[in-house]
View 1 (cartoon, one colour):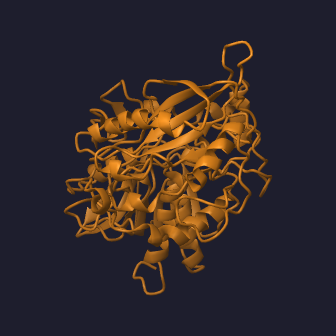
View 2 (cartoon, helix red, strand yellow):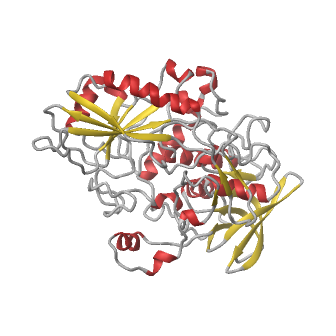
View 3 (cartoon, helix red, strand yellow):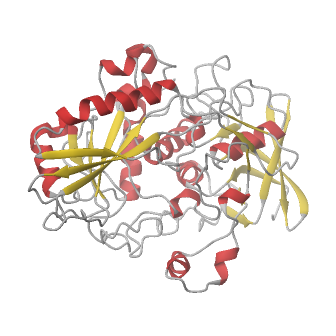
Length: 485
């Protein structure tokens, strides 16, 4: 830390922080000074690949395992995330569908939960910006409104995907994805090996390979090994950030402060700071998911050019959402065979993903160790569970265009690795923690970024939306007329 005070202090280097900084730096003067505090360390992609191959690397022990960093009060439920520079970009699978317009209007359309304080049209231009920055591969037609084409061509359907697309058109599309269809910006083309956690050919967008130049900007100072545990909150302003590095305590002031850790740690920092908003830490959750294995009669499912070839929206919108959760289908093209002679590829696997609602019985609290959030999870909502039953009732009919022999369902998947809620977005402090610009309702120079802000939990993957929200927040807050510039 080179000085005692900065124009902006950012905590974390994942998607939320990086896209926020990208927009901020495009507006900030040359004299701006930014400090970024990252509790983890840089772990290069090439070294991650070596570790996955079983080779030794000195980087492997720099960042702790996720399960070592929080107190889990429900050991049956694990929360999956990655520590270190780039955050979740190092472990995500690159799925980037947009939310549907209906996802922002759950109360108005279905009488469920609350509407978001901003709408699809507010985010549309920022969705486009993120898609350009990530070089997203995607289709020409989509079930959500889209004014511009995707930067890269779509991935190739499997034989079964083609049949379903012919039957359902824009409700069954090539998945929009940050797994590049063709080589771009130093990234390779997707190899369709389904080893996406650490992409072996560096096709997947990450903060490391982004070429966004955020952390190389001379206005930005990046400090590794700096774990933030609280803020000084005084007279409705966030004054200072308190952190530990190499066993020593440090304190730094910021004109503006942005929390960009995940939903657990953002909430823990706020609670340690004395934030008394009744919703802080409440509504922790993620989507539910299970596998549907569809056995086919004399139809080979072959082809495809990536891990998830397609998304199906046939069970997403509709009157059922008044009572039961929406479902997004993912066509899973991981290597697999059917264990019957002559029928090796007469099978398609779908991942069925269900939206969830924030419930106060699932929450983050403080623990005796100020660095470790205490995570309490009582279970999924009845709304999400009813969505599963609705899907099982409707799926056979939806797949009647295929020669289906039988459908087998897995148990619930342990985690979707999407940590949501705890600092929900709302029109007022009576309903949530942050406003539509991700500014804390009480502390008006404090941004709380990331998927913790989601008012409700769409079945669509959250990364594109949380990145668009970061661009929107910085764009609106640091305009020419803004007092935060």
